[in-house]
Length: 334
Ligand code: NAP
Ligand code: F7E
Image 1 (cartoon, rainbow, N blue to C red):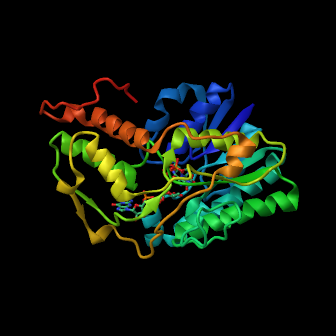
Image 2 (cartoon, rainbow, N blue to C red):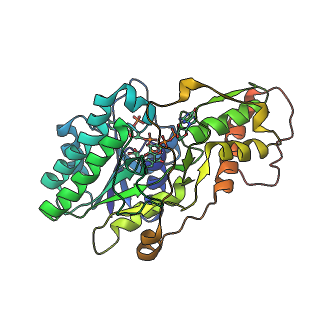
């Protein structure tokens, strides 16, 4: 089996590539041109995958990528994925995250119409939620240009499935995190901050809305669900979530507590990190994925928080001259 992954250099792309390699797939990845290489997350599997230069903004390069890889499965994970940036660059976000889906679907329709297609839809489409928990049937109410662009990509995927009989599905994934999460997202910002504070590199962590609630899972679990969706007989969209919700404050509490600190001594709220419109709370209902895909998350919320703190401590430790008891002596490294 051959898979083509857009966004292979991102958090999910790197976990998915590892997962598919472990299942014997030939893995191709789309990477975009940059003045300096950005392959840290895939460095350890670099010699096992094939990379093809293409860009979501460029139809010709995407069509060539599909023609060259001749994939059985295409996973469209590439996007401008940071919500605050979408308020500052709404047009570019629409081009990448929205119209980019049209370009990749066109490339598949013309160059590999039998390939199965996975679109990375998002719980941000539910935005100002119209019911709780959110299911595959909950209407969308996006609250950011990112969420709006994802709604376009989502419905276009449904439309290509219905119009051209393509095996095209969307996974409506709720927030999922890992030690490979970008440093600007709140979870990684917190665990990086905790590690720096523990190591004496800084003393405060500035955050925005501590009361926002998210349904947070572990990225390694979620890429398994993407693959499972493409192994079904019938193409269908699925919500992928844990069904449990926590506040940003809860995340801080567990992360600081895991190294013997109290978040109240270090977290400072800063209006600079508030958004023009907020998504106050998200809780997904994973029942369809559990029943039809046999999918279940394996890493709990607190295990994931501690895993991320541990990984950041390990990464930053050499920078510190202080000798500290990290309190993780018995746990395996990530
Ligand atoms: P991520 O870490 O931000 O990775 C995004 C990837 O997209 C990177 O590989 C990036 O390449 C690539 N990319 C961006 N613009 C591109 C362009 N113009 N052409 C080609 N590639 C481009 O995101 P992630 O967390 O892995 O998420 C994967 C997908 O799932 C995204 O579509 C995201 O919107 C969606 N999603 C994520 C979550 C979540 O909680 N993580 C939840 C729901 C949906 P560079 O390395 O060159 O920047
Ligand atoms: O924010 C609050 C912030 O940036 C989570 C993307 O992967 O998941 C992600 O989008 C919450 C928000 O993720 C800070 O206001 C407080 O309510 O980690 P985030 P997100 O916006 O939920 C969805 C499913 C995606 O699809 C996206 O691609 O945390 N928050 N203080 C903060 N957020 C950030 N970034 N920084 C803060 O200082």
